[in-house]
Length: 327
Image (cartoon, rainbow, N blue to C red):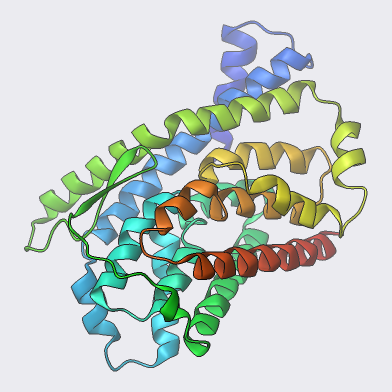
């Protein structure tokens, strides 16, 4: 099914634009067209489907369902909810704040926050690069890391690091778009759900399209023009040391998972170890400075520091694990 994007890119690159196959410019253009079409089509389709599902979610329903349930079910639901939320870490924060205000245990909400930057939409695209078995394994391992931080938060009583917070509005700005919290409490028809899911898809695509295009553009330039030996020499010289370096390099940057996947794909194809590029992607999406600025609304510095430290160490462990698996 995904070959249709390769066929489209080949037709436009070599037949319509009449570029010479095998040249650096043609390779870059082909990569840009194929990844742009593939990512936007998959992204739009899965956002729409997940949007239909999210229409039935609300803070009250989640809290009522969790009441009296075993703790492991609550953590599992937090992981699943993190997988189906929108693309960037910032866009998950309003829902996270809503859960805090609703009184859902902090460990469960922190699990959701840790997992949400790597949604199922991005996993579907990632699977076309590294294979769906490794992609699913990666998603599960990230979910386990998120649960680990949630359990640690509950066991050590880190809820003392929460600030008093009153949710005054149902909308919050994030990632250039408005993220709604419990915007629909009344019963709605299927047509209403479809319309809302379509609006979600449109709004999210409007907020991320530029970052996705920039990511693909950088990836296509690297794919066509950067010598393969460059990354092999500087990023894959040491299976272990390259991973913490990827964490440090990724924190100051910011993107959603879909926007950074094209860059990750090129680095992987150029010879950079799989675990190193996955760690780089996780650091960019889950340890970004913008989300921690927003989180200062509800968290004290102590909890933010613990969150960064735990995820950073987890990403290093995951990166080394995948480097060993792929070696």
